[in-house]
Amino acid sequence: MRARITGTGSYAPAKVLTNADLEGMVATSDEWITERTGIRERRLAASGEACSDLAVKAAERALIAAGIRAEDLDLILLATCTGDYPLPATACLIQHQLGAVRAAACDISAACCGFVYALSIADAYIRTGMRHVLVIGSEVMSAIIDWTDRNTCILFGDGAGAAVVSAGNDDRGILSTHLRSDGELWDLIAIPGGGSRLPPSEKVVAEKMNCIKMKGNETFKVAVRMLEEIARETLAANALRVEDLDLYVPHQANVRILKAVAGRLGLPLDKVMLNLDRYGNTSAASIPIALDEAVQQGRIREGSLVMLGAFGAGLTWASALLRW
Ligand code: UT7
Image 1 (tube, rainbow, N blue to C red):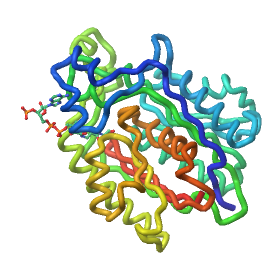
Image 2: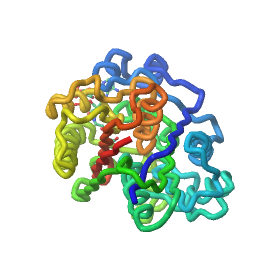
Image 3: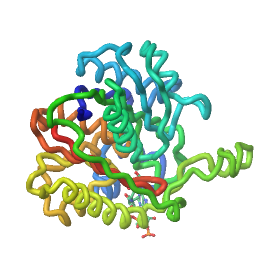
Image 4: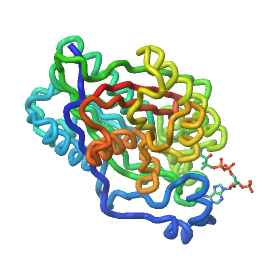
């Protein structure tokens, strides 16, 4: 029994925020953002549009692509750090909206690695008897951004991506998943206020402690090392080489990180899926959006060897190897 992605879908809100728009908001420039990050524009959710709204649209597309009904789902896993409410899990709202009447539902909190963590959980459940698991990454990062902080506000965007993972009997599917964490580095990327350590208060909001803070430069260096290490580990675990890969679909945080990782691995850039120029960093949604675009563009076909690679707050880092 092997777990296989049988359908993908994605959704990005209509509103576009360009680098030129940001020039009017903080002391930055289109040139700086493009050169240092590779991002040119990002999408923003409309007022009142929440995480579950984006997720449901991506999920409906993935269900159609997989050719199954919501009623067929056994489990819905939503990777997010920007759920609709602190309680309940946003996955339950999605379960209701989709009409997935038989499905269990919960959220996975692993920041930008959330989709790969959730995929790994789906893989384990399929191997132990489930038939269909819906894995979603959906984020409204614009809700947790300090729009006066140029270190972070230029980086992030909103969006959702989804994948149906189903049981299959052939050799295709998820070959292996690899998950890591190092909580010693928790404060490289964090939202310091609004949780049980520092509950919501006027002070928390006034000091923007309910917004994401990041030590970008330190994160950058660790990210390159982690992505390279886990990619090598993943290939070694499957007795495969970098040359065997058809496409690397990494978390879309910074094009310079991804160029550095590709260079260290000896992977040509045309085998790296890049779409951060149009979406920015959409945290847990970035890999499933990129995966769906790669499928739509025909860059992933039956038999393709695809590696996913993620890193993010926690710190966490993760990878998955798939035979499509
Ligand atoms: O998904 C979560 C994982 N997060 C990431 O992967 C983020 C990883 N980090 C990065 O992508 C990069 O570190 C950034 C894009 C965040 C920053 O790029 P950098 O090359 O590391 O710049 P820096 O932080 O070292 O800052 C260089 C300079 C500083 O000015 P001084 O001190 O040299 O005068 C910053 O104040 O650039 C300045 N700066 C900016 N200038 C114009 C920082 N942000 C901006 C900005 N526009 N938006």
